[in-house]
Amino acid sequence: MELLNGFPFELDDFDPEEDEITSEVLRPELGAADRTIARRASLQILYELDSTDHDIGDVLAVHFAERPEAYAARQIIRRIVRGVMANRAALDAILADYAPEWPIDQVAVVDRNILRMAVYEHLLQKRKTPVPVIINEAVHLAQLFGADHSHSFVHGVLGAITAEPKQKFEIAIDEVDSL
Image (tube, rainbow, N blue to C red):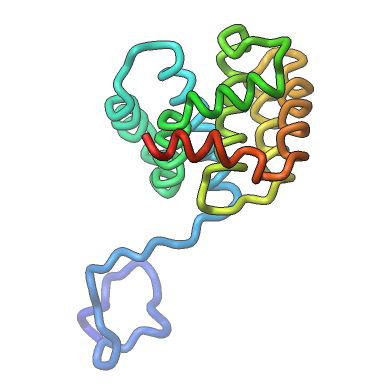
């Protein structure tokens, strides 16, 4: 037990003669708070990518270097950002169908990226997030970062899209995936 002296915490259930010490890094399951952080960070990254001609890899690298506290959420951030960017044309086509009075290039940058993220999560992401969670998170982001009535616009568009059966969107998704 001399080997364990000097540790700043008790190792109650550890027996060095029976238990093995490894250098394996264990990553805990990400919780809802981590996913909320990931969505917020993804929105910031997508905003930059939509407003500039910066490279996606460079933007992700800078973001991760500046925010080490988001380490647990990096995988989710990468998946959302890369997924939205890879499928942006299909996402924009869907949004144009459900908000025809607002051409996608005239929708505020924050709003359109919130909508892109939410539609990506709903239709394209392999991990199935419940629809109410997707809508609530998107509306919350719109309340935090959008204009005064952004949350109503986001809620209305997402409500219309999520009310449709997913099969209706298969063609647009398949066309983009095959590229």
